[in-house]
Image 1: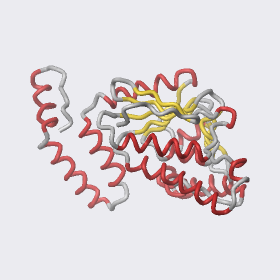
Image 2: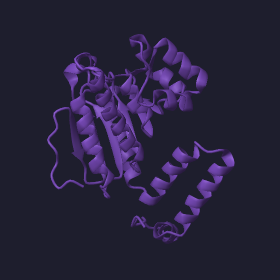
Image 3: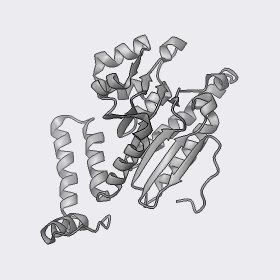
Image 4: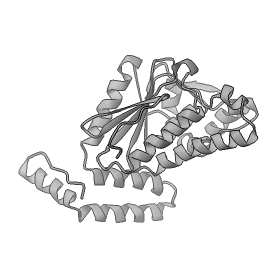
Length: 266
């Protein structure tokens, strides 16, 4: 973990003592569009978090209420040549790769419009909470391109093939209620309450035994890509490892002794 906080121009990061971190996208004048500077800062911050052994949960949100993130900054992209566009997109993909390999739950608190890469950041999160005014969409087809930060892979796994293709081939936006119905969002709150509710969930997760949190997340993420029998075998292996852990024994002792457990992450 870095000994000093970084100074960022496009994001802000707040670290709480309970192991929860809040990352806020902060380009309100551009509706938090992803540009090269933001990509570099996201890569830098998530790279720090990879080696942060005290981190327990991350909440991603954006400043203001109008937008969560409207995807790539097309004004910047229009100034780049072909190689520049590819380098920029490689940065976006690097952020996604680091985030996917970070063994810490991520909650997206989507308080406004999420389009393109903004929706993909949400789809790549473990839990998505939305304000009642939130909107989601993958409108890249209207620009003659396609989703490039995992949208074609994440969305069908959540909504099913037909609904995902309908959204991506028409470029339609859906509101928070529709996103809830098709599984993109797990809960909806009034926008004034969204961040506090997201932090409540993050703090609850942060208080759980870290080994069990990581194991459950791995079983869902990786097991979901396996056939059922292989997924069950993977679950069993993780379960048996937890049963033999110090935290597994502590959980049973604390229950029998009717006291709060003390988790040691081992």
